[in-house]
Structure formats: structure tokens, C-alpha cells
Image 1 (spheres, rainbow, N blue to C red):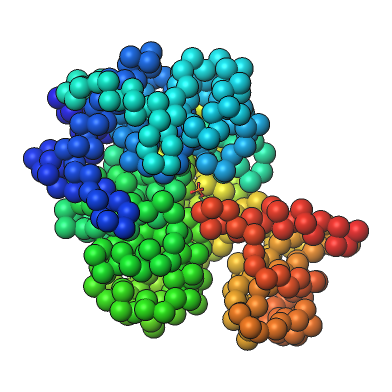
Image 2 (image 1 turned 180 degrees about the vertical axis):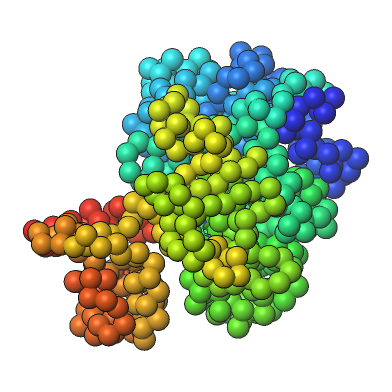
Length: 507
Ligand code: AMP
């Protein structure tokens, strides 16, 4: 019966005749939840959704801890034809108010610890039903599931129906709800399963949050489609990951996972039997790639994607995984480098805005037709807002976000070029280059640099290191040394915060 529901059918196909196989493996005791139990629970959860008044097309918003129950709710939404809407666990009640009023869900699921604070918010927004999921999975949503029996008849859903809305992280302005169809999620996971060679023998270390595309769709959907297992960890914990590696085959992480793991003894031994290390969501420094290979013998496979497009490029499974690049467009995905003003294709090697077209691309922003028309064009291309180039061998390089481009004295400065140079200076761990308002130049180039542990670096030293290597308009006017860069939960450097902190530097 699952075959009438585009996404649920594809998530269940590999395990349909393997109910005893472990899907989720939890905690230190390696307690396993089988595929049979997981899907039967999801079916019961879907029945519970119907009983709570959730109809096909309705939104189900959830801000809850990373639990099996939250994944059951995701699959239950697909089965019931509802739209799953996960929210970052760090959002405060005023932020939640915005999402609930914008998306108008029928049901809101939250952590019981936040129930008192969030109930009035949900009520004000007209949300009919509120249920809870606690960190241990207990709560009123599980109680509702327990009252139902397995054997739900999935609501028919086609490829164009909505499966989820994920709000973008919104570093500028309000965040927007990216509408993701059954086709976009299913086709992307099928492609990734294929190109990364995931099978039922894989055991993936899952330490990412499940309110974001990386942990929810890339990690979870790929495992389900392969019929493999997830070692389901509540979050990043270097010791837990190292302990898991000998029983695992693959790790998906953000770059900070890799830099932090490199600081731990025993990595080489732990990683010896692993098949694959994947990185994404933020740029992986070439230096981290090289150090990882030196210590473990593995080349990290870096890929690129975003909430709106799912994954779009990947380094090859076989062949050179080129450090500092995000590899080639995935099968079925078209990628173009275009002039930001005219949208004309640029010659190979030139930097422009990355545009993407394919079955992986979202269906538009929730209730924002004008914003959608600006970014998702009538010809099917989505203007990502990322700047990049394609090298002579076809590898895609990400240069940064278009909004991070610095225009100093009327000339374009690509932060990545300056960062790469500073990162290579002795004693520098990493850097972020930003544009700061300047009375003469409009914007001035400012570098924020982080020293390697135990090393001292100075503004004068860095300025001297860049002086001969860069045209003067690209040279930092000031260097700020910080112990670390501000990052969000997905490891992305928060340049908007840095710009704000240093806005008055030349005032
Ligand atoms: P999100 O929608 O939160 O997944 O953020 C997507 C953005 O993260 C992209 O538009 C890129 O700017 C950035 N990103 C994702 N993967 C990479 C990568 N491998 N290298 C550089 N930037 C990346």
C-alpha cells in the first residue's frame, strides 16, 4: 500500500522484507530499534495525526529533542500526507511565534520543558493541537501513538506534493520556508545512496541535528533508502564518535566535527575500518582535509547543498576528492555559473553566481510568491546566492555567499581568496574576511584571524604576510585576532555577526 505514497514508498522499499534489521542504534548499550518497529510506530503515529485532526496538506510543526519519536513523526507526516516542519531547538518563544504564525500548523509538538512558555504562543497563533516529545522520547505524542494500532493505509501522494517545509537559517532578514516536495527529497536521497555506495551493510554515525536538511534528509533518508543502520547520537561528542567508529562504516559531519576529532588521540586506530567520511554545510579547509588524510589515510568526501536544493554537488567516490572543492554536479543536476546581473553564462574558470536546476530543487518559498519568482526562475533554475567557479577539470569551487562579497573602492574582493592566503600564514588556524563600512572606500577589507593553539599571532604579522601577495585593494586594512570564529549549530561562520561587531571600526 505504501506504493501510492511517493516518498514513503521509497523510504520503505529497501526494508520492506527486512523488518528485523536494525534501523536506529541508541546509546552506550547499542539498543536497536528494528525497521519493523520503526515503521509500525510511524504508522501508528500517522493514525494519531489523523485523530488529532491533521488532514493532507496540513503543517505539523515540531521543536523537540533529537529522538526516534521525532523521526517517526517525520515518516508519519509523509504517510498521512501532512507537511513536516522541524524547527531549530535553539529558537526562543518569540522566534517560534513567527514560524507558527507564518506556517499556521494544525499541530505543534514541543519539548515538555518548554510547554508552559510555548502553549500561549501556539494558542495565539491559532494552533489547534499541542503535544510533547521529551529528550527520552516520552510525552503526549508518544501516548497518542500508543493508543493506535499499526497498519495505517498511507494517503496517496504524488511527486509534486509537499513533504516538508524547512525554514532557511536567515542570516539576513526573516527566514523563509522552503517547500520541499516528495520528489525533491526522494530523488536526492536515491542519487546520494547511489553515488556514495550506501547499502544495507552500512552503519552511519548520526551526530547531526534533525531539524536541518543535513541530518534529517541527507543522513536519515540515505540510511532508510539503503536499508542500513544509524548509530543515533544526541549530538556531537568526540569520545562517543571515536567509540562508535569501530562498529560503523560512515560518518556525515560538518567541518567542525573533523577539526575537533583531529584534536583527539586514538583517531587513526578508531577510523581504520571506516569506509567513508563525508563533510558539508560549510567549507572544509584544505588544511583539515590534508591533516585528516595524514592521520587516518582517508580523503574526506566534501559535498555541497542547501535547504532549498538538497544536495547539488559531490566529490567522487572513486577518483580524486579534491581538497577545497565540492566536486561535480550530481547526476540529474544542472549547475551554471552566471553573471549576477545579466544571468549570462560565464566562461569556465570565472567567478559568478551558482544557479541550479533539477528534481532536487524546492517548489518555492511558503507564501512568498515574489521572493520565489526572484530566486526560482521560470526556466527552473534556482539562484543560490553562492559565488563559485568551475576549474579546468570540472570541480566546483565555492568562493562564498554573494552577500559576503566585498566592494572596496568599487572593486570586487572575494573573501575566500584573502582567507586562503591568511590561513596559509604561519600560526594561523583559520580566518574570516569581511567588509566593514569605510568613509573612503565604501567598504574596507577586514580580516578576523584565529591562531593555532598555543601560538601567538599579531595584526602586524598578518598584514606583513599579505602585503606582497595581494593587490592593495584586496589587502586587509585591519586584522582582528580572536580565539575562535562565531559559528552556528551547522558550523557556518556567522559573518553577519562579525560585520555587526566591527561595524564601527572606521567610523
Ligand atoms: P543551509 O541551507 O543551512 O544548508 O545552508 C546552505 C549554504 O551552506 C550554502 O548555500 C553554502 O553557502 C553553504 N555550504 C553548504 N555546503 C558547503 C560546502 N561544502 N562548502 C562551502 N559552503 C557550503
